[in-house]
Image (cartoon, rainbow, N blue to C red):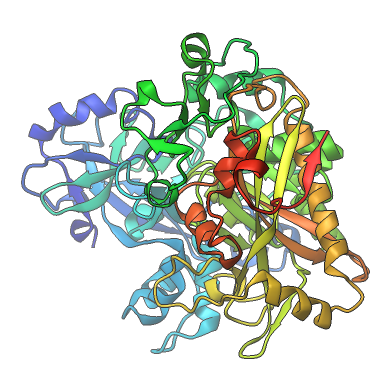
Length: 636
C-alpha cells in the first residue's frame, strides 16, 4: 500500500534539495511552493515505513469516563481508530543518507469555496475523506450530513500553500490533504521528520517532501511538528488546539492599540519615506493642471480644459496613480507643489488590520460600536481564542468572518463558527477575524425575499490638518441573491453581496434614489436622513482617529496630498432590535479603476464626472465647475 503513495527521491536530487533543506526548506511555515526536478520515481517507501493501528482503550478502561475524556485530547487527528507511522526498515533510517528523502502524495487539493461541491460530485472523494478521517460513511451517494462532517473535521488534516505569481485570484491559498500515509504522521514537539510542500515540475503536481531530522532505528515513530516555527509557548498551545483541545480562558481578551513600534515597523516594511514639512501651495486661478495618470478611466473621462494629460511624470502638476507612491521625501524636497491622489501612511485606513488597530482609539480595546469586534490572527490569536471560548460558554453567537489583510472583492474571505477552521486559516495568509453580523438589517426583494445588502459611500479627503472630509450623498447598493439565514455559510450568494466578479450570478441593481423610499416603507420607524446622519458621524470619527497622531501612527499631514476613498458598510440591529446601528466592513479602499468607473456610471454624475477632480485639486471648484456640493462636509 505504501509503495503506491510515497516516492523515494533518488540521490541525484540531493544537490538541488540540499539548498532548500539547509534551513528547513528556508522555513516550511512560509507555505511557499518549491519547484525541483527529480530523477525517475522509485516506489519503495514500503521498505522503510509501516502504518500501525493503536488500540487506545482496553476492556478494563472502556467504562472509565475520565479516561475517555482524556483520550479525546490525544494528538491523533480525527476519531478512532488511532494510527501511527513507524520505521520498519531493519537498518533504520539515517539522516545523512541521500536516499532518506521521500515524497508524499496529496489525496485532495482544492480551494475552500469549492470544497463542498467537490465532496458532493467528485466520485469517491467523500468516501476516501470519510475513511481517512474516521467518519462513518456507508452509502454510495454523498449526503449533506457526511459532507458537513468532513468539512468540519478536515481542518485537522489540511495543509496549505499559495502561488507567488499570477493574478489575485490565482494567488488565493490552496489547501490540500496528504494521502493516508501522510495524514497519519502524528505531532510531536520533538519531531523525527520534517515536511514541506514541493512542486514536481515534470508532472506539474504538488507533493509533500518528507525527510528525517535525526537517525532512526526500527520501530521508531515518524512524527512532525504541527506548529513548526512557533517558539512562544502560548502561541504553540493555541496553534495546536485543533489536535490538543484545551481552554485559553486565563488570557486577557482585551486588545489595546499596538505600540508605536508596531507602526514604525509597518512604515519600514512598506518602504515609504515620509515627506519633509512644506507649506500649502497657492495656484493661479486660471492654471491649467498637467495630469500624469496610469488609470484608463481617468484618461477617458477627464475632458475639462483646466486639465491636460502628460506622459512625462517629471512635468506633471498632479500625479493620479493606481500604483503605491512611496518616496514622499524626495517629492516634498524637489517638487512640493505637485499634488497627488495619495496620503503618506494611508494604509492605516486601507489595510484591514491597521484600520482595526487605529479604530480602537475611538472605542478602546473593544473598538467603536461602528466596527465589528476584530482580532489580528497574527498578533492576537490567544486573545481571540479566549474571547471565542467565553462567548461559547455564555451560549452567545459565535459566527466569524476571516478576511485577508489586503485583498478586495471578498477573495479568500470565509464565514465560519468552527474555531479549528479559524486557527488554521492563520497559516495561509495574514488575516483578521471579525465578528460576523448575525442580525443584519435586511432588504425585501420581491423575487427572493429578505436579503443582506451593503452600502458603498465615496468620501473625499482634502486635508488632514485641519481635517477636511467630504462625502457624496450618492451611494451604491449591493444585494445578496438568496434569502438570509444563519446557515449554509459557504453559500456565496446568501452571505456575500459583491456579485460584480462572480461568474454566472445575477447582479441586482437599485439606485439610491429608488432605495430610500423602499427602505423607509419597509422600516417606517427609521428615516433615511437619520440613518445617513449616523453614517456620516461614523465616517467623521474614523478619520478623526486616523489623523489624531503624527505619522507613522496616523495619516501624514502632507498639504499636497488629496484622496478619494470608498467605504463599505452594513446596517445591523442591536440586541433589542429597535435600534439600528452602523457597521463599517473593514473595506475602506482607494478609489481607483473599478470604483472610479462606478462613479462615472452613476446617472446623477453623468454630466459632472469631473466633480472629484475639481473638488480635490481646484480651490475655487464651485466657480469653475457648475455642480452641486458633493454632499456633507465633515470638518474638524
